[in-house]
Picture 1 (cartoon, one colour):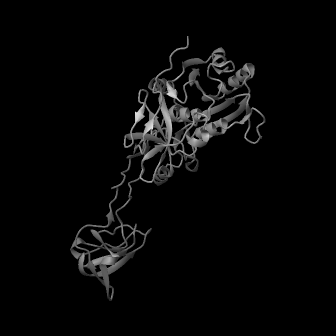
Picture 2 (picture 1 turned 135 degrees about the horizontal axis):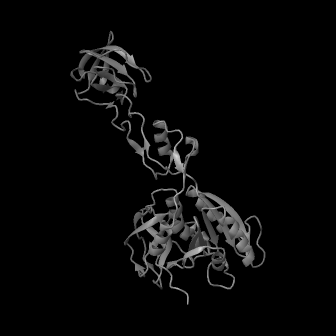
Picture 3 (picture 1 turned 90 degrees about the vertical axis):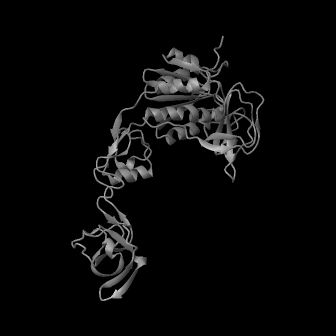
Length: 395
């Protein structure tokens, strides 16, 4: 008797609990985009490193911000001021230049008027303003980026600012992708009768790479038990995660589950109460994880996004809070059966509401290519009215 499929939440818990953490390595800063920090990064400087002007203008004492004063110095950026500002004096200063000793405010250039003979009339209002004070953004020794933070362009700027030119990051997971199916041909070939092109391999490798992991495409394996076993054994020996597409259901040519058992994979679950994706299989052999996905392209995309993307992020030590965006349903949604959790491709309209895309099932990959996000409808929910508040996962 086939066991009942697991609730999605239980499958998700098992997947994340099985994840090993990867070792750390140092990389050059220009190679760190998309990597995940393995350790906290602390600043070796105050930021700003000195009191500096936030505007082009005149640095003076507060008591001289209104009235006529003598211009005794000019301070461009990159130059340390050598003169102290006394009563009745000011210094012409550029944005980002160090504030001279004695100065308490910077009067904007627009609030000044030249008087001739090295003097200027200021209309600054007498308030401390237009100064970036030393350490007001970051103080020396402060954690500027925590372990688990994915590195994007903004994070690279911070790393550069604190001199972290060799950040310690988690090793990239090695992910092998094996697509099974005797009906498949590679994308560069024109399909013959009863054949279709392999889109799952390209799709899964792209999804793997987008998480920051390394993808190895093993290509197509026909529905032949011995060939699948040979390919699976090779991939398991050289991967952190092996993904199979196809061959995981209960048909006569679905060999993947029995092959994995035979080569020592502990199957942690086989079957999830979700649509699409019900035949999903997940297991491990030693430190290597493996996941069998249905062959339908929408199912492979959905299960990867909901289960395997969080798995890879957790493997690298990254924060894995789902990227959920609140939205309003633009149209009614209804389905005939509600026993399984459903994942529905949706598109945002001009007002920020979402509407389901016309979608014919798990093989309709062209539909999901038009989607902006995925709406997850819980098991037991059959209808959602227009105007309902929902959360979606952006694609």
